[in-house]
Length: 525
Image 1: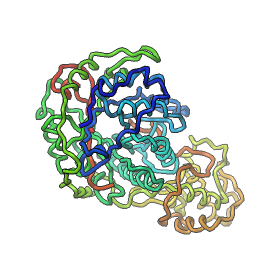
Image 2: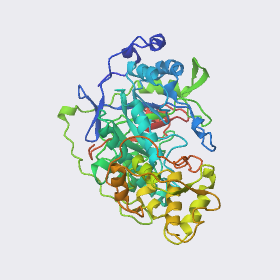
Image 3: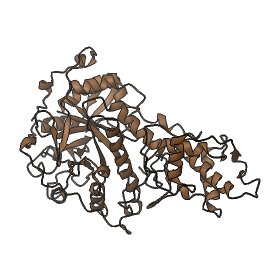
Image 4: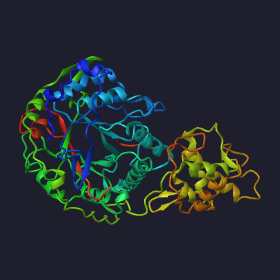
């Protein structure tokens, strides 16, 4: 097992700051069966992780995109914090939102020098899959793939999360279909771009009524649509609990035959199933789960949980297997859960793949569109109006589970324009059909090129056909407004064989073999 001690890394704050000091690339982590391994020497990899991002402010205004701070774009803070992460023998961090337009080179190099890998969430506060009104569209696809693009060339990127606790009760499990579509399309994008293998996973909650269906759903069906690893938020081990009293024994048994890496703690009861853990969290916030409190840009204060975790993690020596001697036995995918009142996400069809070219081609052919002066705040009312008229003008933008319109992946401006145009086209004797209370206007259509003709033909006149052409890359559509990605203000919050891991609010003392302490949480991977 690769060592995790602070001494073995030989990295001090001063050397972290020196950009001229460049270490060799770290050994990439690969997945075989339900376990993680170092690619070169085949040693099993167990995550000893920390969630590394200051609290993300709920996005409840038009300035939502400024409501989070990218921790990997702040080289000063990285130089301050990485030596402390090394004292905790950290080999993995999780970040919840990055800004793909920022430069991450310095922080990623420091992390690489320290032997620390990264798992990054693909969403951000104003662009995520909303459990109450889910969508998977061009804008979200552009966001997710831009994160992949910005991090793909760093060999210490372990993988990505396509969602975090999106479905948290039976009545919103339909949203999981949109997350699974995001998994499918992100995996396809990584392959299309010829990037090295990087996993795409999901971090789930531990709701008793849906946890089994969630695990089965994201692991079932075509491997191209299944997650590569499984993150599990478990909140049942607190204080002086135990492996059995907490229910971890039951959760471990449930995932013994899961075909993806599952995260957990490091004792003999769990290492055969789980692949490690991620402590929540590094930064002290109002929730009091922090390991360190920021004093200034260059200084932090260690909290009691830091000391307790540091002393206990030093005693951890997980016993694993070597890749060469490991033959996966749990290679069978789970059966997809049937739909009903307890589970609403169908295994097929999934939401269609976003395709900015399709939406742009469609928009070019419209003669009745939304005025650029119309506020996106008024879109809901306008959708209600046009979709309520006779003629089924909204069939092509329908996002109902199992009955997706081809243009359901387009942004809100393009969708509303399509519906306006469909209605107006059916009102040949009504010269004011393209008005909608002054919200619509006419425009000249553009002659489509051959590629556009093929795409629009697949979608069909009503937009209810199936488009088989794959997305050509990142980018949003041609409508002037965005307004299509789910926002935090609306939300409360490879192979079939993939590893799973657990993200739980454990007391750190329990995680680290019994040190009594307050409030820190463990994410298992």
